[in-house]
Length: 99
Image (cartoon, rainbow, N blue to C red; front, top):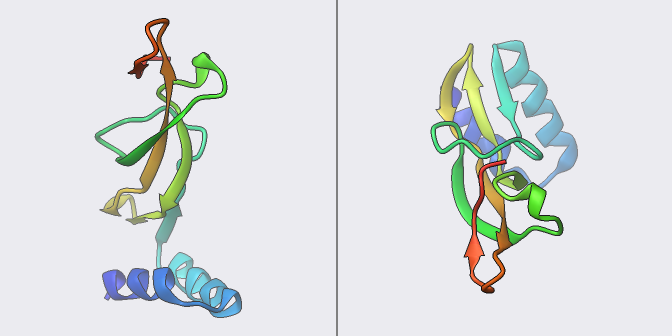
């Protein structure tokens, strides 16, 4: 049932109805997860792409959440799908760095 409600939340075009579904999910213990600004962790996030970091220090940080993740009382239903910052090394190739 939780997975069905999550799917509905993702597909509802109306902001007002989406808010009602979100509140209903929260009432039964389902948390919507956004990861913007967090360090990328492949065990907790699904990388769907990379973008050039405006600052090399941001490499390995999540630039934006493309699809929210969900937890049901702490149990992961779905990881958030994210874009990760990468930076160019001096040779011009993209290289992801650790923090």
